[in-house]
Image (cartoon, rainbow, N blue to C red; front, side):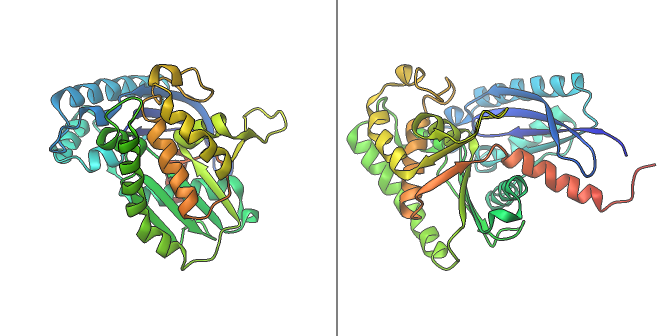
Length: 317
């Protein structure tokens, strides 16, 4: 039984993140390298939806750094995927061709529902079958993913353009935002959520609601509570009431002061307000009282899917 080192390079709306795992069939993947570059790509999207040359340069620099780190880590196989910011850009195809030439590998363009399915798979594997019916929520930089079901493949997988960076870029130009800007943001979010609320009413209620992503993790550190008993990795839970209590306070705090709050990192300080508002509205509209934070998300789901498919193939000589 061989030990492989597999990498997942996630070119997202906020960061370019390389995560390297040591894997062996039948065992849990163990992360060995994590390398992140903050790009905040939505800053470089103009009024026509085009990623500017400055944005392409910033992206190229981050991707080149990740490829160098991947080689140093002696990765046996690298999975490369892009999500909403490039997928939805008016010049997304041109940017993708540029990245493919830079990386020298195939670049997988994930659809929104595929993001939701892979994140759901990661959460299901983390919690196991005993968790029952799951509802999984993930707020990224460009989109919100929602998935629910009993099995490893969700019954419902939805992606909406409600990412924290996108909403900040499109609706919160001032810092702190004005009351009118926030009211308009809430209206946009509720309108986008309305069809999802109707679809969710057609499926059974979840036994457990789980949130992933840096946005939810930051909010849980800020507003929620630790639930672990001194384990190696903190576990967090957050109630809808705790979150809604914090939202008005976040709206009044300028970005440079938000960095001092627990869980709010410098790269998230500008978009945590929009992230908090969309999280608050999602929990409210879906009738969620409490969410647990899962440490596994999209990158782990992509790795698990790849390992599953590799397990169906004959072993390498």
